[in-house]
Amino acid sequence: MKKKLTFSKIVMLAIMAVLPFSMYAQEGKKQSKPVEKYWYIQADGGLSINHGDLANYNGGIWDDFNHFKSQAFQNWNAHFGVGYQFGKVIGLNLKGGYGLLSGHKHGQALVFLEGTPAGVHQDLALTKTNYIEGNLNLTFNLFNLFNYNPRRVINFVPHIGIGGIYYKAGAVNQMNVDGETETEGAELAPAKDKRDLTFTVPVGGEFTFNIAPKFDLFIDYTYLFTGKDNLDQVAKSSEVGRIANDKDMYSQLNLGLRVKFNNPCDIEKMARESKKITYRVNPDPLVEGEDGKVCFDVIVTIPGEYFEKQAVMNLTPYLTYNGGQIDLDPITFVGEKVKGEGDFRVNYKEGGEFTKHYCKDYVPEMENSELKADPMFYVYNGNIYPNQDEIVKNTYFTRGATEKLADGVIAKPIVKEPEPEYITVTKERAVKKLTYFFNKDSYDINGRRKLNKEADAAFKDLLNAGETRIEIRAWASPEGEEGHNNELSNNRANSADKQMKNIIKKAKKEGINIEGNGYGPDWNTFVELVRNSNLKDKDAIINNVNNSSNKQQTIREMCDIYPELDKDILPQLRRAEIYTFETYEEQVLKK
Image (tube, rainbow, N blue to C red; front, side):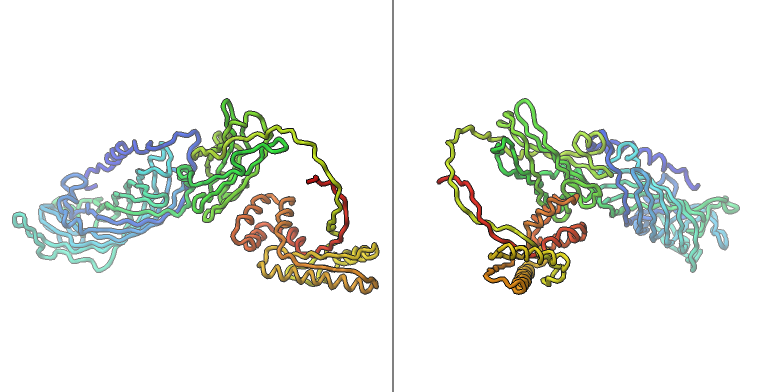
């Protein structure tokens, strides 16, 4: 080697100087933080420093730069690269770039690698050697060996690799030295016409500064050992010939920017900004019902661009009073990319409003109490934990601010009511007798002929039983546009009316009064059928539809996710129901 390198000493001093930062702002939880793996691209540029034969390397590692600062600032390089971080410590990157090298040498014995000797103790200058290089580097995040933190502000990352340099050596000139003045004289070796190729071994390290979850700024110093000695066309001389195994070297001091292409799940940020979540309770304050139960809804509103796609939030409400508390069932919210199931799935861009219903038996301790909740966040790791004790035991987590949701329970007063007085009244009610069904977007009663034959037979039985007053109530499934559904339901009522009049005519019945109306999309029956179905996410489906500004579009999207809706639920809504009327007596409170 051309000098005694102190690079390893510099690395050790740097580690000792910056090591305290590795412990900065760590929470010290029992479970370690989840490891982030990600791709990245980077670009860097800065100074190229020559450590070859035509360089002033009389002092330490920086003397090559310090002696000719004006010239050194003209020797630049730039790179572009791509890499992957495999885990806490190990990474790999591939980068390529372009650069320039030049240098001076005073009073040294040098020989040209091609041609005649340069002479003894001459002053020589290298103009510009330009090079194209590429290398593959293995990186090591040393601070993460001690304490893993993907959000650490400062990291130290040594690297070592293998690469190649494709270069064209610049011209070598005789220097004229007059006191402190230096000028270039005769050209002793012209610039090379063709490029040459050799391997490199890059060794270095960088300090990275995490300026945002996806962005690192870094300062890198890399020393590159090459496989040849002709980057500057000369070699050191032993006064009688060339010194063997004397390879050229150069280094780079660069500033760069790295952009990460992972989508980091920043649960620390979610905890810090948990006040963005708003809560309502209905009713507030809580009230004991007539049945001795305290029933209420907890309504959670999560803003858009808040809930990370791989995050899980456990919200555990509880009634706290002097001397104890009553725990309620937790609510689990999951991000849109979480594969496990929770109570509610939250879209990252839109957020949403979510309602959980509770009923608890009233106990006297509830009278002077407060309803509170603690949000807890963790990254999905293949498990959804049922309660906060399991979260603490099994995974890394963060806590949001404790929230007061509502005041305690107003107990039902004990009042002796007077004995009520009732009277008997006669009322009339419509009774559904049969149903005609239709295909999607159709009002052709023959489209579902097998089912509708059964309806025809049932209608004939009504006529034979002496029914004379008939009402038709027709509906449409709610996934279509509302105007279209209103027209479709009216047409279905007309089809049923026509079908029954044909049956009346064939049965030679008279005095039958038929009234019919279309009622458009049947939202209420849709919700009832979903609630009574075996669908796993039926509460989430109902919430998504109820909270949507475009319910028809939301139902169509839900059908893509849950084919059972299109197969089992919606066909039951495309119908015309046939009602007759009956009278009955009812006891009502006397006014």
